[in-house]
Amino acid sequence: MDLNVLVLPGDGIGEEVIGEAVRVLERVAQKFGHSLHLRAGLVGGAAIHRTGTPLPGETVELALRADATLMGAVGLPEFDHAPPSQRPEAGLLGIRKALGVFANLRPVRAWPWLLDSSPLKNHVVDGTDLVIVRELTGGIYYGTPRGISGQGAETRAVNTMVYTRGEVERVTRVAFELARGRRKKVTSVDKSNVLENSQLWRQVVTEVAAEYPDVELEHLLVDNCAMQLILNPRRFDVLLTENMFGDILSDEGAVLAGSIGMLPSASIGERRPSGAWTGLYEPVHGSAPDLAGQDRANPLGAILSVAAMLEYSFGLKEEAAAVNRAVEAVLASGRVTADLKPPAPPATTSQVGQAVCEAI
Image (tube, rainbow, N blue to C red; front, side, top):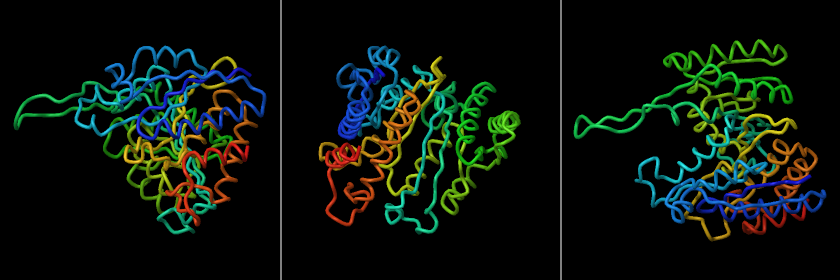
């Protein structure tokens, strides 16, 4: 198969972890006989430095032509006080919208070798295996009107949370289809006791659930869900949530996995005629500028994102499984970075990437 992939390293540690993810992708292509075609582009702070905008038009064109996009983190402290449209994060929001990737899949797994890395007790996290399905292109991050106006005591800020029935329906179907291949349970998260937006969300999810009689549906308020994720994470299979709630809850999942560096993500859109998904793949962690250039960042979230890319955008399940098995082998060996608290001296970013390639 021809694998046409756009690589967007982004900011901070993005270049390092995505570099190792690309090494793994190259190893997979070599082993399984695929032709890998890579293009590189700019996004985030790196794009602002080079072009003055967080998402250059050329990057959008490259992404639309690619079969899949592999992306690092965006964000740099120097832009912390810039207006939202001029921050690196605007590039991330922009490319999600340009690609039409409306559902973000974030698997959270408690790996047996990392139970001691979680601040929670082992018996609480052991056996955790869930996927957060987060709506990605609607909600408060995109709604209008928005902005800051007025002066002095009259200064006011407005953000608008907007969802349509169609937006809720399509992400709900992704969650239920995913649950059918897992343990057949969807937990829908909202705040319907106080938000009309969430009342529509709950109504539409309930209606769509009727199409999937083999899948159990439960509803949870978001504050209760945040608590249950810590108290009893094994109760969850597929968590379905709107954009902002999913943003928060998925980072809470890092506590269960032992490190935010272990969390991959797949942002998917409409299916192509081949059945593959349009996809944007990125680790969940941030740009961690304090670690940049030190060869200390954990690349496994980025590498696991490659596994997701192989499965969802190319339908290469055997190749995806090979990457996942290799990551398991590396975790079992203890050859991991410092955030995972290895028993021996920690490995570097590049050493971990090399170990995964060797395991493949």
